[in-house]
Image (cartoon, rainbow, N blue to C red):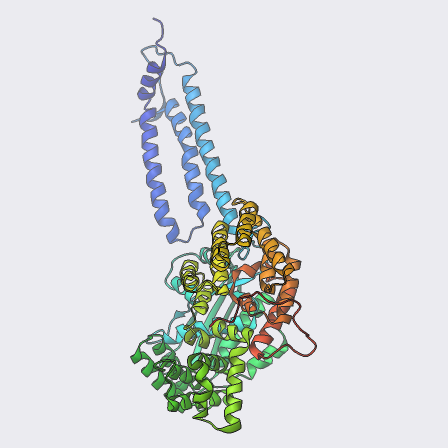
Length: 627
């Protein structure tokens, strides 16, 4: 009899040999295993490649199972070779072709999976594949220098609440940002990871940093000592760079938090200098109870309620009484009293006298210079033009004139003013009356959408506030949205110049130059625009010129413009501390020197030093200090 042929005969043969059933059982079992792997593997901190390899193995195993089921059958006696069909079915090349197709599909799917995984890995490992002209966050290349660090919330092993751990975390971030040119992620940005089960490399990738600091605090409510354990992790290689335990008496807590910051910065940046180490040793001791009362006052101040203000004031009073040489509670007490002003037009002279006394006392004690200077700026803002008259009711003659001059100097130096309001704890807490300062604070914390909302509200109310337009444009750029930045620039031109021929020409040139798939085209237009302003004798910020050069990938020109910005005391230099836009430059020694010189300027205040001369080039019009 002639053997039966065709697809129907082949299908019947597949069923007789239980190939279909074996394939179905295998697919179901593989699905269950993969589901379990997706749940179980993360619990053991298994790397992503383990689950990926499991998926590929499942794909490649299918043709093996099908071929095995065709040749062998499972019987009560064990595995046996499948007998030829009694019906005389002739199976030609069909099973071989089918097996070849299934194998090819499985291998292809596996290759696609690995290719996508590799592409994802490249994207998360760094931005080296990005166009050289694009502004980039910190590179996550394992061999790249560390330019940005995140200090995660400290685990609290103390008795009672976690007040001490939270405040110590804030202090370490503050001290670290003061002694290093690294970008330090703000406390607000890292707080959401306090109870996260994410792996540290994943957290680093989200924050755009190469190193993460984690640790714990241990103390008891009645103890006079504190122990801090810290680990510094290099995220790209998942290796520890530093693991240290610090144990000090509570009276040395101010020195300890500075010592911790120096240890971290030294590990990342190398030798910081003997002078800084000597300064750490000279940090004053503090009464433990006075320090606890100070922390309690800061915690109560965070409530931002009338009751919280009163409670904070009482805590600062107690702290200052317990340790008369401790300047911080005195400075913060001045700030709390500033918050109690009912309005800017009516300031009780007796309250002003108390504020001035606290400012003078904290200044005399030392150790709170930035907080005192920020209090002077905020006080000047609160009282406004009536400051001189109100102050005259408190002090007389030459003393009154000198006092007014000191406040005016603190408030009038644009560079120092912006530093005090944006980069000090005191300024950030008390200077939030300025929407521009608030917008920049949100930018520094990586809350770009919220910053955009703030800046948009400012320019809608007053289109001539240039720093708000710049901040709004930067909010788009830091998210890689160059088209959004172009839209902001077009709105800015129309809002500030109106529908004039010059405005129309600028917008036409912008659209002709910009190509959405080529971010460098945006920076080329911005460079040409700035050069046109300079040619017409208008003022352009040195920091703006540096940002444009950096966007075009010209690091040398960017550094040259930043050096000019230091000479010209450009207020926008403050962004060097916090903005991720400058990350590509942070490993350059010239950038480190620029930041060091800028710090000297914004912490010292006053005009250009002798020999520095006049500005090389005027600054951008309409960029007054944030008010």
